[in-house]
Image 1 (cartoon, rainbow, N blue to C red):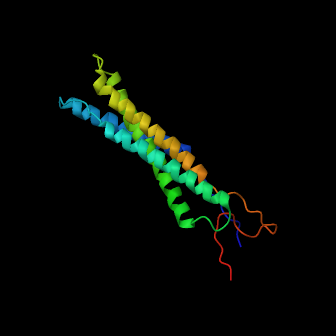
Image 2 (cartoon, helix red, strand yellow):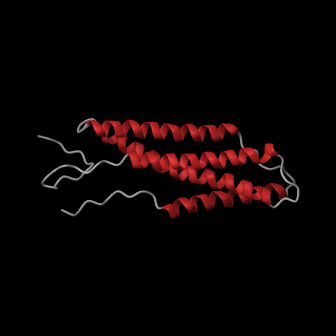
Amino acid sequence: MSAPQKLRGLNPLHLLGTGAVGAALALLIQAWLSSRGRPSILLPYSMAITLVALAVLLVVLGLRLRKHVAKGTGAVNPFQAVRLLATARAGQIVGAGFAGFGGGLLLSLLGRSVPAPTPTWLPMLVTAAAGVVLLVCALIAERLCRVPPSDDPEGESDPGLATLET
Protein backbone atom coordinates (compact mmCIF):
# COMPACT_ATOMS: atom_id res chain seq x y z
CA MET A 1 0.00 0.00 0.00
CA SER A 2 1.41 3.43 -0.90
CA ALA A 3 1.88 6.14 1.66
CA PRO A 4 -1.09 8.52 1.98
CA GLN A 5 -0.68 11.91 0.40
CA LYS A 6 -0.75 14.86 2.76
CA LEU A 7 -3.52 17.35 2.13
CA ARG A 8 -2.03 20.66 1.08
CA GLY A 9 -3.68 24.04 0.85
CA LEU A 10 -3.89 26.14 -2.26
CA ASN A 11 -0.64 27.50 -3.58
CA PRO A 12 -0.28 31.19 -2.57
CA LEU A 13 1.00 31.94 -6.07
CA HIS A 14 -2.31 30.73 -7.49
CA LEU A 15 -4.14 33.12 -5.18
CA LEU A 16 -1.85 35.98 -6.22
CA GLY A 17 -2.43 35.05 -9.84
CA THR A 18 -6.18 35.10 -9.31
CA GLY A 19 -5.90 38.56 -7.76
CA ALA A 20 -3.76 39.74 -10.66
CA VAL A 21 -6.32 38.43 -13.17
CA GLY A 22 -9.08 40.25 -11.27
CA ALA A 23 -7.06 43.48 -11.28
CA ALA A 24 -6.26 43.16 -14.98
CA LEU A 25 -9.91 42.50 -15.77
CA ALA A 26 -10.97 45.58 -13.81
CA LEU A 27 -8.36 47.74 -15.54
CA LEU A 28 -9.45 46.51 -18.97
CA ILE A 29 -13.12 47.14 -18.23
CA GLN A 30 -12.41 50.63 -16.91
CA ALA A 31 -10.22 51.46 -19.91
CA TRP A 32 -12.94 50.25 -22.27
CA LEU A 33 -15.61 52.28 -20.44
CA SER A 34 -13.52 55.44 -20.40
CA SER A 35 -12.67 55.06 -24.12
CA ARG A 36 -16.42 55.09 -24.78
CA GLY A 37 -16.95 58.15 -22.55
CA ARG A 38 -18.89 56.20 -19.94
CA PRO A 39 -18.60 56.60 -16.16
CA SER A 40 -16.62 54.28 -13.90
CA ILE A 41 -18.15 51.12 -12.51
CA LEU A 42 -19.92 51.81 -9.24
CA LEU A 43 -19.97 48.63 -7.18
CA PRO A 44 -22.93 48.15 -4.84
CA TYR A 45 -22.25 47.94 -1.12
CA SER A 46 -24.43 44.82 -1.04
CA MET A 47 -21.61 42.97 -2.84
CA ALA A 48 -19.18 43.71 -0.03
CA ILE A 49 -21.79 42.84 2.59
CA THR A 50 -22.40 39.49 0.88
CA LEU A 51 -18.67 38.71 0.74
CA VAL A 52 -18.27 39.48 4.46
CA ALA A 53 -21.37 37.40 5.29
CA LEU A 54 -19.86 34.45 3.41
CA ALA A 55 -16.60 34.95 5.30
CA VAL A 56 -18.39 34.90 8.66
CA LEU A 57 -20.38 31.82 7.64
CA LEU A 58 -17.19 29.97 6.68
CA VAL A 59 -15.55 30.72 10.03
CA VAL A 60 -18.68 29.76 12.00
CA LEU A 61 -18.96 26.44 10.14
CA GLY A 62 -15.24 25.84 10.58
CA LEU A 63 -15.46 26.44 14.33
CA ARG A 64 -18.48 24.15 14.53
CA LEU A 65 -16.55 21.42 12.71
CA ARG A 66 -13.52 21.91 14.96
CA LYS A 67 -15.77 21.56 18.03
CA HIS A 68 -17.14 18.27 16.69
CA VAL A 69 -13.62 17.00 15.97
CA ALA A 70 -12.61 17.83 19.55
CA LYS A 71 -15.52 15.72 20.86
CA GLY A 72 -13.91 12.55 19.56
CA THR A 73 -14.51 9.83 17.05
CA GLY A 74 -17.84 9.39 15.37
CA ALA A 75 -18.94 12.99 15.92
CA VAL A 76 -17.88 14.30 12.50
CA ASN A 77 -19.70 13.73 9.26
CA PRO A 78 -16.86 13.34 6.72
CA PHE A 79 -19.03 14.59 3.85
CA GLN A 80 -19.74 17.78 5.78
CA ALA A 81 -16.02 18.26 6.37
CA VAL A 82 -15.19 17.77 2.69
CA ARG A 83 -17.92 20.17 1.62
CA LEU A 84 -16.64 22.78 4.04
CA LEU A 85 -13.08 22.29 2.79
CA ALA A 86 -14.20 22.69 -0.84
CA THR A 87 -16.20 25.79 0.07
CA ALA A 88 -13.23 27.25 1.94
CA ARG A 89 -10.98 26.71 -1.07
CA ALA A 90 -13.57 28.26 -3.38
CA GLY A 91 -13.81 31.18 -0.95
CA GLN A 92 -10.07 31.70 -1.20
CA ILE A 93 -10.25 31.94 -4.98
CA VAL A 94 -13.32 34.20 -4.97
CA GLY A 95 -11.85 36.42 -2.25
CA ALA A 96 -8.60 36.83 -4.15
CA GLY A 97 -10.51 37.60 -7.35
CA PHE A 98 -12.71 40.25 -5.75
CA ALA A 99 -9.79 41.78 -3.88
CA GLY A 100 -7.90 42.04 -7.16
CA PHE A 101 -10.93 43.40 -9.00
CA GLY A 102 -11.53 46.11 -6.40
CA GLY A 103 -7.83 46.92 -6.35
CA GLY A 104 -7.76 47.15 -10.15
CA LEU A 105 -10.69 49.54 -10.12
CA LEU A 106 -8.83 51.68 -7.59
CA LEU A 107 -5.69 51.57 -9.73
CA SER A 108 -7.66 52.82 -12.70
CA LEU A 109 -8.62 55.92 -10.74
CA LEU A 110 -4.99 56.79 -9.98
CA GLY A 111 -4.28 57.68 -13.60
CA ARG A 112 -6.88 60.43 -13.69
CA SER A 113 -5.85 64.07 -13.75
CA VAL A 114 -8.82 65.00 -11.55
CA PRO A 115 -9.25 63.01 -8.33
CA ALA A 116 -12.38 60.91 -8.18
CA PRO A 117 -15.02 61.85 -5.61
CA THR A 118 -15.45 59.71 -2.53
CA PRO A 119 -18.71 58.08 -3.70
CA THR A 120 -16.76 56.70 -6.66
CA TRP A 121 -13.72 55.17 -4.96
CA LEU A 122 -15.17 54.17 -1.57
CA PRO A 123 -17.27 51.22 -2.89
CA MET A 124 -14.20 49.99 -4.77
CA LEU A 125 -12.11 50.12 -1.60
CA VAL A 126 -14.83 48.41 0.44
CA THR A 127 -15.13 45.62 -2.16
CA ALA A 128 -11.36 45.07 -2.20
CA ALA A 129 -11.31 44.95 1.62
CA ALA A 130 -14.26 42.53 1.67
CA GLY A 131 -12.41 40.28 -0.79
CA VAL A 132 -9.39 40.25 1.51
CA VAL A 133 -11.64 39.44 4.49
CA LEU A 134 -13.18 36.52 2.57
CA LEU A 135 -9.73 35.27 1.57
CA VAL A 136 -8.42 35.37 5.14
CA CYS A 137 -11.55 33.77 6.62
CA ALA A 138 -11.45 31.02 3.99
CA LEU A 139 -7.82 30.33 4.91
CA ILE A 140 -8.86 30.10 8.56
CA ALA A 141 -11.77 27.77 7.70
CA GLU A 142 -9.42 25.54 5.72
CA ARG A 143 -7.08 25.39 8.71
CA LEU A 144 -10.02 24.45 10.94
CA CYS A 145 -10.83 21.50 8.64
CA ARG A 146 -7.57 19.74 9.50
CA VAL A 147 -7.92 16.54 11.45
CA PRO A 148 -5.43 15.92 14.25
CA PRO A 149 -3.17 12.87 13.83
CA SER A 150 -4.54 9.64 15.23
CA ASP A 151 -3.27 8.01 18.39
CA ASP A 152 -3.12 4.62 16.69
CA PRO A 153 -0.02 2.84 18.04
CA GLU A 154 0.27 0.67 14.94
CA GLY A 155 0.22 3.71 12.65
CA GLU A 156 -1.68 1.78 9.99
CA SER A 157 -4.84 3.83 9.77
CA ASP A 158 -4.80 7.04 7.80
CA PRO A 159 -5.65 10.18 9.81
CA GLY A 160 -8.90 11.77 8.75
CA LEU A 161 -10.26 8.73 6.89
CA ALA A 162 -13.38 6.97 8.02
CA THR A 163 -13.15 3.25 8.61
CA LEU A 164 -15.93 0.70 8.82
CA GLU A 165 -15.99 -1.59 11.80
CA THR A 166 -17.35 -5.10 11.27
